[in-house]
Image (tube, rainbow, N blue to C red; front, side, top):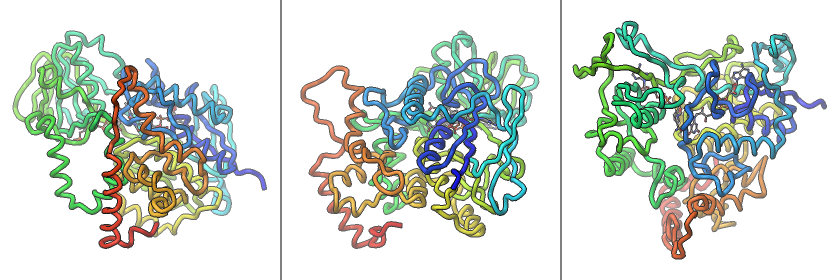
Length: 516
Ligand code: FAD
Ligand code: NAP
C-alpha cells in the first residue's frame, strides 16, 4: 500500500517533532514553512514582520532536562536554562541527527486547507501553498497544524481610554528587541506575564524609571529551586503529583503560598499569578521597578491608575498583554472563539467525519511545551495510520467540556501517553527495576519516561533517566570541589518513602495500582 502523505504546517519545534513522528510511524511528511529556516519563534531576528518573535536576551524558563525531545537528550555541557541561541543550536542538532531538513519546503506558505470532495470516505485534504508568488495544490491524507500560538500580538487598546491622545511611543512586547533605545526614558510595562516581568527587569537597567502595571498581580517563582537545582526538576515529579492528589488543595495552597512568601511577601510587593522571574524582586526593592495597579486612562503625557495615582512624563508604554492565534488557512474546520479551539485532548477537532487533522502544541502548560508536542505528535500519527482510534464525536465533546482551557502537566502528558500506549507502568517498574522506578517516581518527570515502553520505545531511555542528574550538574561544575555530596532525596529516605507510599496507597487507593 502507498505511504500516507501528511502535510506538516510550520517548522518550529512542533513542526520538527511532528516530521519525526510521521517518519517513525511510516508516514510520508512534507513540511511547509513560510520563513527560510527552522526554529519558529526561537529564531531571533530583527525586522521580520508577521512571524513570532522574541527579544534578544530571552532565556527559556523551562530547564533542559524537562524540555528536551524524549529520544535526544540535550548535551550535558549545555546550560540548564538556555539562551535562545543555544536552544536553536539544539534544534539544529535534532534536525540534523534525524535528517529532518530534507522534508521541509522553506519559503512556502500554506494558503488554504480544505476538505477533498470525497473527504467523508478518504479523509483527504486539498492544500494550496504559495512559493515565490506561485501557487500549487496537492492532496494529503493527513494534516498537522504546527503554526504556533504566540504570533499575533494581543493589543487591547480599547481597554485603555485616552491611548489615542498619548504623545509618547507605545507598542506590543512582541516588537521589543533590545533595551538601548530606552535609555533615560520613563517606561510603563503593562502585564505581569513572563514577557512583562522580563522586559520590566531588562528596561530597568537603562531606563530612568520603569512602572509595572498589573490588574491582578503575579506569583513570582525563580528558576532555581532547592540546592540550586532547576525548579521544574524539583516540583514536576510524579511524587509531588501524587501528593497533589491526596493532600487537600487548600492545605497545598497554604504551603505553596507560605513557601513563595518566605522569599518575599507578595502582598507587600503587590504581585500574585505564576510567572518566572529571578530578578524582579531585586528591581522592586531597589526602586528601579515600581509596581502599579491597572491603568484607568492615558492623557497626552501621563497615565492615571485605577487606585487614583498618576505618573507624569511617560515616554514609552509597552503592552506585554499576551497573544492571540488564528488559522486563516483553515476556514470553518477549526473555529477560534475567545482565543480557544474546541479540540479533543487539545489535538483533534471532534466534529470531522475522519480524524485526519491534528493541532500540535496548542496548549498553555505550566511546563515545557516540547515534550507535550512530541507526545501529541506520536499519538496523532498513530490515529492517522489507524492504529489508534478516537471515541465518538459526542464522547469527545463531553470530554472537551470536562477539560478546561489549561491542563495539569503530568496528568495531561500521562493521558496522551496512555492513548499512544507509551505511559510508563510505575508499579511494574518498582517490581522489575527498582533503581529506575525510584528515579521515575521521585525524580524529575523527564520526557525520556515516555520512551521506556510501547511504540517508539528507545533503548537509551533508561540510561538517559539514570544519568539526568549528571547532565544537570555538569555545566555547573566549572570549578570542581572534592567534597560534593548532592542528591535531591537521600537514598535511605527514598527507600523509606517508597515503602510508606506503597503501604498507604495499597490501603487507601488500591485502584491506583492498575494502569489506566
Ligand atoms: P512557532 O515557534 O511559532 O513556529 C510556528 C512556525 O509555523 C513558524 O516557523 C512559522 O513561520 C510557521 N507558519 C505559520 N503559519 C504558516 C503558514 N500558513 N504556512 C507555513 N508556515 C507557517 N515555551 C516553553 O515551553 N518554554 C519557554 O520557556 C517558553 N518561552 C517563551 C518565550 C516567549 C517570548 C514566547 C513568546 C513564547 C515562549 N514559549 C515557551 C512558548 C512557545 O510558543 C513555544 O516554546 C514554541 O516556540 C512553540 O513552537 P511552535 O512550533 O508551536 O510555534
Ligand atoms: P501572557 O502570559 O498571556 O501575559 C499577559 C499579561 O497581560 C497578563 O499579566 C495579563 O493580565 C495582562 N493583560 C492582558 N490583557 C490585559 C488588559 N486588557 N489589561 C491589563 N492587563 C492585561 O503573555 P506573555 O507574558 O507575553 O507570555 C506569552 C508566553 O510566552 C507564555 O507562554 C510565557 O510563558 C512565554 N514567555 C516565556 C519567557 C521566557 O521563557 N523567559 C519570556 C516571555 C514569555 P491577567 O493575568 O490579569 O490576564
